Image (cartoon, rainbow, N blue to C red; front, side, top):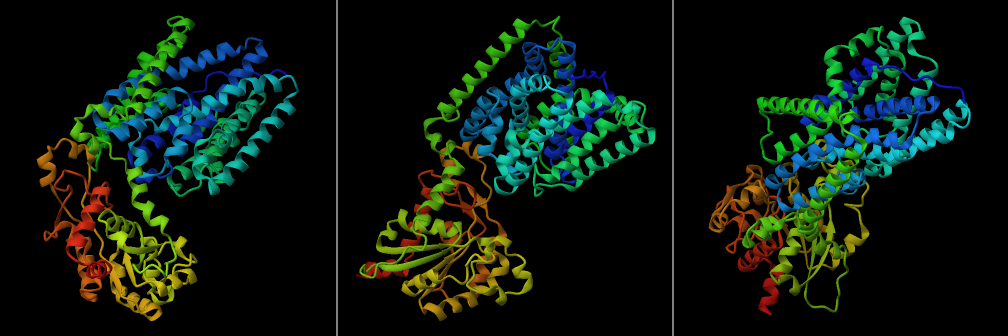
Length: 638
């Protein structure tokens, strides 16, 4: 293959790095205007593909390429600063994370050191979910994607270079096309897989690689100045469009992602030192940020995540500015005293970098393994605090739904003389089912359930019977789901002795609950009960763990006033036999506050809305003692 010339240093590429890293930082800092700031990572992939391909092909053509040398450079470039960040994260994680968070952090630490953190976060984290902002190592997914790519890419180039340049371009282009088609398809059907995994990101790196091959034959400086300026302008416009107009709902990576990546390609291909945008991107301010870009990227997510975990990062702008300052300070220090020295083979030899990489990696993996096996170092807490400290929202959520889901549209047994209860609703209806069984009342009933999301209204009223503004509030996925017209549900309604509705009621629904009950009775003519909504206030495990046992038992929290108002409105429209005020029942007569623990010091709600097992038992016993359940009263009378 005809020799391809290597390129000299291009300051505008460092400027492009700055244009990539700053939006990512602003996005993770929470600036809503940078709603598409995450595309900076896509730009980094393009830049990485361009630079690495330029280096590898230049060395291959010069006859000096070695895989050992390539991976040594990668290790020098990536590992020292990464290890520094990981090590400094450890004490902050120890003091700021509860065990379930610490266990997840430990698992992610192992994944980072094994270069598979993209797989870990693929299985555990929605990148655009609010909880993602609390994960200090979330951003390492992109490092893992790159390292996985560079495991095979040098060997692919070595193989393809045995053929001509046309074969090289055709092969890389074909792989890129397959990759982006797969990415677009998976962005619809398997969103998380598309976002995190290499096969759907490879095309972005290959765009950079193809740009490198083109420029090694035809440097931008040979183009007309007007073309270069227009190309640079177009590239910047594409980038800015994605940064400010994309958001968490934009499918990514997909064909939409061509907008920022082709923007980066335009800048790489058309911008040169003497062009207009070359001078802008080559300004020493942007170049300086570009030189710090790797360290900036490493530091920003842990600093923001730990600030949020400590409740330091809030709406106060001065705190955000302080954190931004810390990010830049730490980035400069790690670049100046870690990145630069370790890249210098005269100061740090190959054996040293290898030993350091192995020892630190094993030590961090060992820490992660211990953290996993000890359930997030649960032994840090006193024995009496461990149950509270080990609350796992995911497992608690499974508990909430399990019984309810087992009884979805379960047919009633006509030979069983127990009362037949149909319970319709969302996760609050799931809480109600658990309350019945934890207090033994469920054993005296036959229970069948039907799930309807609170977004769908949980009203037995066809959409045509609701005003337009109410219909617009109903989530699109609810339409056509057979919520109001379901023959299996109607049959169970006819067979039931009672029909109960429980939901996280919204204010707009209260005016229609009376009509909904009337519609139900037209079909079944059976007694109907409506269980009100409930709230426990904000829950922060870290704050609860510092309280003594008596302090927890005596703790009361403010309830959302909207919940009280919604229950009051429902009460106005229903009789006392039809309405059960769940909030009043759980929280006694103090309508504005609610206890968070029972008399034994057990937590009643794990998230401020849904009941733990102890909370379900507490609710159920109060239902039982207040004699509010007709089915149980009838059984007791027998």
